[in-house]
Length: 437
Ligand SMILES: [Zn+2]
Image 1: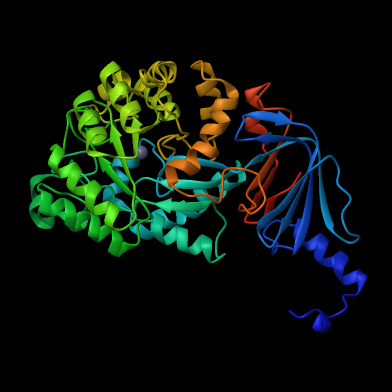
Image 2: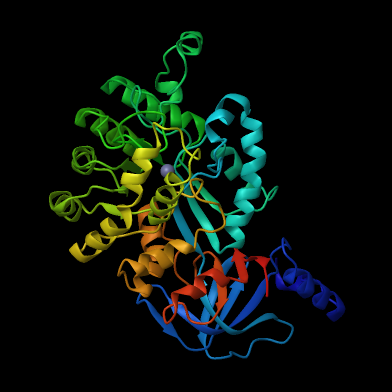
């Protein structure tokens, strides 16, 4: 707008707008200054002293040391006693569901719209916990939820959605596992449209189908999984040429590939074929770690899910009997694998697999990482700078001029005491305040 046409704004109106900006869901004010007592520098992993972060039109305008003096009338939010951090990213969630003893029967009773309504609540809890972005690794609700959030219709994190995971027949993410013969006969064998492939051609088709459905990233289930109604949790379930076809086709659309994997053979094939990240990685051995370092593959451990299912395996009736031994054996191992991988120098990024555990409790993964011997600063980097690198985006994950204004704050210093991550009480996404102390 040319300067000569700028309307003079009465000061009362400026004040009213400034106050409105503090309320959750308020429209982004033009300029807001955040006064942070401490600031987490995600690039160095250091906690800095007092800083002023100036937010303009949803982006970070400048980051100034101390309590900077700003033009009169600039709206300011004082975050006394708090550490400001870049909004966190959880690289492994499933916003369309949350496990319970009813999950298996609900597959037959619920409609997609039921999952969609639940997902709205899960997305809100995730954002309120400080996660301004998530990568949703499997679920048909999420591309639609992403659009509704981007349109401002519902509150939630920025979603990078895989849509339907790609599996092989009977594999983890074959949607008809556990069906009886009558039902199986009625629905017929699932194919690439449903995310099930058995050849190179079908692998390509399945990726193109995800493109058609609006996915942002591709997820494959390189080995069996814990919660699927199938016997093996770690058998390899793709031939290497099928994974290569998926990775190559994904590149045509600018997609990265995330591979769920528990067993070593499936992990090796996925890493060699060029996936971006290994999810869970339970039985990762020295050779897999060496290959991951060689290929620059990220590891997303999801310790939370491991501990959660190991816990629930002890609860009679929580899981079907075919699932229970897998949950007990695999779940208990992931935290130890994360510790070994970190010591070996495998790059780690943050993910919980929430939807297995309860949405909104995602930050507990930081505590589990620190328990595994991962330094708290590294754990916080795994959900900020590392996560942005895994996603392949350069406009988030750090508090710097020009980046998206995704900023959270919490009382205390999370590098000194990681338990502080459970107390997030300020959440800003794209310059909008969704939670204020
Ligand atoms: Zn998962």
